[in-house]
Structure formats: structure tokens, C-alpha cells
Amino acid sequence: MQDDAQYFETVIIGTGFSGLLAAIRLKKEKTDDFVLLERESDIGGTWQNNSYPGAEVDVPTGLYSFSFVPFKFKKRYAPQSELLDYTNFITDKFEIRSNTRTNQTVTTITYNEREALWHVEVESGERYIARFIIDTSGVLANPKTPHISGAEYFQGNLFHTAQWDHNVPYKGKAVGVIGSGCSATQVVPAIANQVKKLTVFM
Image (tube, rainbow, N blue to C red):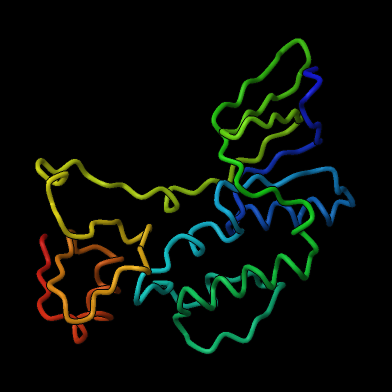
């Protein structure tokens, strides 16, 4: 084994709902020998990243929550802030925070057949070794920004909804939204009455 690597029976990648559920199940099996690796600075997965105006769940909240962890949601379709609150509620209720390491972007996972162990490397240099890997890194946490010729010359602010820059004021500005999917159907109505001009490209 590598001397500088930290050993855990199980490494869970991601702290969205799937990662938290995996941790809860392990705790119910009376094991605490696991670690959750989160690439962001805090837990929450998709609901940590997607904080754009109007962000909310697009199915009834009851279908998006754990049946065994009731929570007093205020809306049938909960906004991002409530879902993040629920994530934190779950984390604290099951004491998962102490098992979590943030700012841990996994770059390499290698299986050593001789050792029958997984070797995990993260961007910041830490190394982990585990018998089991549970990968709960969801696709919705990875924004897909298409290549648009000439975008590098755009002089205004440019960002993906999943990386919303809350330091950029949009009230009274001319705003363009590229795309008309789920995120657009939420953010467009949320900002339409506040901007000077809104153009949706689809």
C-alpha cells in the first residue's frame, strides 16, 4: 500500500442524495469505515451547484425526498434553497458530515488485482485506498457548455446556469439565454420582468 494514502473500507464519490443514501445504508449496517469525497467546497451535489434564479425541482417534492426522512417543505415543487436545506438536514440527522471531505475532485480510480483494492487519487494530491467504491457522481452536476465560435470575444458576462455568477447584476440589462430546456423554463420566467431585454436562443 502507498504510505501516504488513507484507507477506508468504502469510498463514496459525491454528496448528492444518492451519496447521502449510500452513507445512511452503510451506517444502518453498523459500519462507519467510509468517506464521502465531494469536489465542491460544501455538500449538496446538484442542489449546491444549481442556484440560478428560479431553480426548483421539476417533479413533486414528495417523489424527490426520502420516505424515511420527512421534512416540512413549503412548496409542492421545492426551490433549490429548500432542497439544499433538506440535504443539510439529512447530513446532520445521520451525522454524515464527519465522514465527508470537501474540495476532493477525483481524477483517477485504479483497481489493483493483486491487492484486491481500489486506489483513488484526487486533484489536490490526496490518495485513498478502499475495498469498495460507490460512485454517485451524477451527470446533472456536470454542466455542458457547447463550443460556440466567437464566444471568447463576447465582452459581457458569460456563464452556465449551473455556474451562476451571483456577483453579476442582471436587473435592467440585456440578457441572452441559450437553450430552452428545463433550466431555461425556470430561469427565464424568474428574470423576465427584471431585465431590460430578454432574448432566448433555441
